[in-house]
Image (cartoon, rainbow, N blue to C red):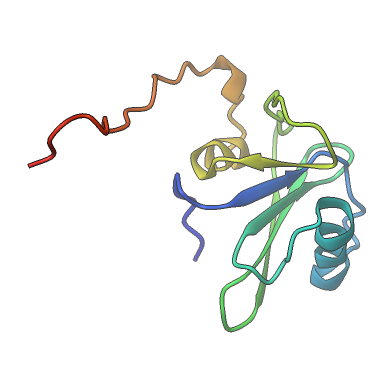
Length: 122
């Protein structure tokens, strides 16, 4: 089972892919287009041209995993990201919303809290 947390390294392919591709072909795209190792434990997300299907690939340490999801109604709405290139990084929580068919551009996210280095944390 895949749980997409906030700290997970996840990369989304901006270019639609041929959904006849299996794990090996998608892993090859990760290497060629993103320069990323598909066996690193990172998660890679792909969509078809119609934006109705998604494939997720990752390596779990013992084997290659591919998850395929089809929306029965509607289309996936990719978030607007400032990164350029064929692949972009994505937060796990954003990917989870995206795969549920939620338009993340309508969601207002609060400012993330980070501990101050000046405070005594005792």
